[in-house]
Amino acid sequence: MRTVTWCGALTVGLFATIAHAEGPDHDKAVATFDEARALIDAGNCEVALPKLEDSMRYEASVGALLSLADCWQSRDPLRAWTDLREAERLAYLKHDERSKIAHDRAAALEAQLAIVRVTVPPAILTEPGLELRVDGVTVDRYFYLEGVLAMKAGPHLIEASVPHKKWAQQVVAQPSATTAVIVRLENEAPPPVAPVTPHVVDAPRDFGGPQKTAAIVLGGLGLASLVAGGTMGVIALMKKSDINSACGGAATTCRSAPGSLDSQVAEQQTFTHLSTVAFVTGGVLAATGFVLYLTAPKGPRVAVTASATSFSLSGRW
Image (cartoon, rainbow, N blue to C red):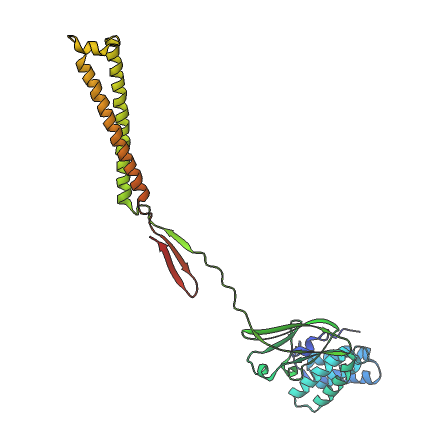
């Protein structure tokens, strides 16, 4: 027996308009339906089912859907229920009096099926863009008011949504029982805002330059003075050594005798004095430059923070 492709756990036939692959063709649909109906009356549903499918492809009809339900009723009540509810919907759209017949026959099967009754409050029914889905398959709006949905026993996901609101609930359909759920839409949470990392902008490196420049100049002069002081100190030591060698270690006697080394001693003392002055001056200049450099302004650090709704600027000067 060929599978009725538009039936299934919930079946696309229940939740969407039937697609007519070959387009409406009334004469072919009627002729094929008559053949199938004759086979059903003769008790041969096996052969009638594919002919009913062909008739539905030519043109969807209430009679073909009711006949499909006739064949499936004893074999697969869920498929039969699906065909009957689709027949009811189609009859309603065509103002066909068989809408009630299809509804009553489907209701009579519900005691054998796993039923989920989805209640949509009136306030939600008026929401624009309302959609109801079962396991991701959209339910036709015709079934919203009554909300009776037959499905295979087991877990199913029921969802409803309108723009910016949604609701979902997992249900377990029980055999030969009814499970009730109520749609309760809730506002969707706004998308998470990515954290904004402040962008720190360093000031130009020459910020506070005058003081730093002075500090570097003074430090350089101080270093030069220390070098000069050291040089003159070495010269003074060398002259002192020469004087001591010439006097045989008696520098005082040499200075008091004729032809003494007073001039050399004076030079040695001058270099010693200049070395001391240079060392003291260099130390003062270097220390001053060091202090000025450490106390020079650091320059601003600016933090810029921006988002979709705000902008801020903060910093240190």
